[in-house]
Length: 321
Image (tube, rainbow, N blue to C red; front, top):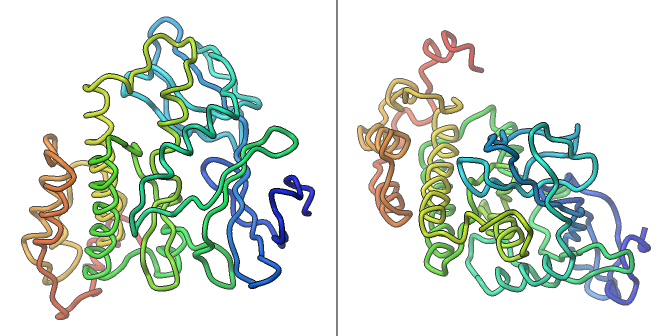
């Protein structure tokens, strides 16, 4: 399997097996021959920009069948998307030009300088002999492979304790704060992009990369929306809200749908601070910034009494669990 990428770039590393597919492409487990240390090789699939025709909106979802999930929306109005190159057919939209590997590598270099304990580090990036962009990151999983947050949630019967949910939101919002301070935004965070390491620490994979790829590439799609302060503010707000949506599901076992069901109706003996957190963060206004949201999360009170003891009557009525 070593022919997957050019042998000179792999050096003493050997590709051992495939891992679950990532949002931006295929993932492989590689082992360093000398140290037996493990890393993850990401082979990014080719991407192409899409633009709306006649002002239509692109809906987040699947383009062109399985494995063609939309990666990133630049604005709520559907100005442009980063979508898979192969087989992407979208009514009322047109392809706006392939994104060159050199542009993707330049975007990687821009985000690579952002270091944070809860962002997955990019160790190396290069272009292989077939013109594909390859990225190397640390392996954070266990003997079964990588452990994205959605996989952990399934292993834990669909929800975590309030202590664990609070810690998860703290990890993610700390990373989001660091990104925003450096002028970067990841956009909406999904559980698939959040890796859980062997110590229980959460790391966002490829933070901000999708937006950096589509922003500076110079595609002929008009003025990229992310270049505007207004769009960047929207992206930051959506990012913070997405973390709160993840936290809500971790704490309650329920996918968020408005109106907000108070945590205290699902988690017995939950402090009112939890209800206030999600009423504000998932309400119509939301938090003013990532630091504001992080402060509110850290203010949530947890207690060992009755933690994990869900309101099963409510969950049954909602057909959950």
